Amino acid sequence: MRSAVDWLESLSPWPQDGFGTGRMRALLDRLGNPQRCFEAVHVVGTKGKSTAARRIARTIGGPSYTSPHVSGWHERLDTDPDGFERAVARVRRDAEAVGATQFETVTAAAFADFAARGAAVAAVEAGLGGRHDATNTIDARVVLLTNVGLEHTAVLGSTREAIAAEKLAVAGPHATVVLPDGEFAHLVPGEVRIGGAAEAVEAFLGERRPLADAGLPGRLEHRDGEVRDGAHTPEAAEWLLERLPEPHDYVVVASILADKDAPAILERLARAGRTLVATASSNERSLAAEAVADLARGRFDRVEIAAEPAVALARARELGRRVLVTGSLYLLADLARGE
Image (cartoon, rainbow, N blue to C red; front, side, top):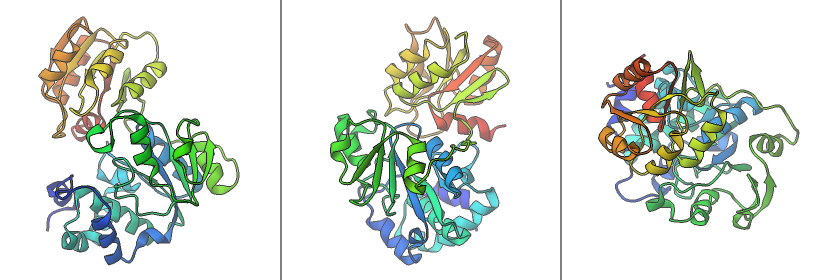
């Protein structure tokens, strides 16, 4: 039998018959509805979800479910590779029976694994949007919205208001919803609090606690003069620039997905350094390296192309003392696999 990873990677990442939670609910029914065994904080938003979910989980004393991964699939379930194999094996037969997608299968594996571990609490990050996401099968007491930007507009809507509505659709009438500000409070059916991960913890536990470290790779990760961050939106790139050590003389290695605002991302990354090595991650939605380079010309003084991420990183190291690798977590995952 193929390994869990090999089998998962053979599954379709996208539903063939449209988005919705029907198939996911059928799968969870077959598994005995493990999502009812723990209470959860549900994290939705455009950026910063994984970091928030992991920090919340570490603080409230449970596991986290995040995506995508950098170090390996096991990262998503907050476990090790052997634990991940067992988690997927636990749901594989039922996932095959209902024709579950890749994300539905991993989500079900997470819920079943958390239940098998005896977890009483967990933090769960939504995948795409919220309303039709596979994670919208938990009844979370607390929902955290990290922020809202224009992303996946073909699926979620063309305005921030529409996207916020899709994300906040995970909140039930009795949930406490933590928002970064009051802009979308009118979309919430129940209690609203203003804040971030710390306020979500306080709402969940009923007391204030210092937030634990996330410990996630690829989120403002520093490596001997190199910085790696999965900034994949203009807002995330702006956030990254505010936190980069001075001076901003980095050689930038970037891969960007085709459904992101690549020109705006590159416009911001040009403030990190004047040289760019364009590349492409292994994700099927990745822009070709040549396309990234075309968009970068006129924004950077020097633009080079390296189709393979490892080659791009090696070239960047030749060109400068400090390197910034960014634009997509999938790029960071490709590099992690080769290290």
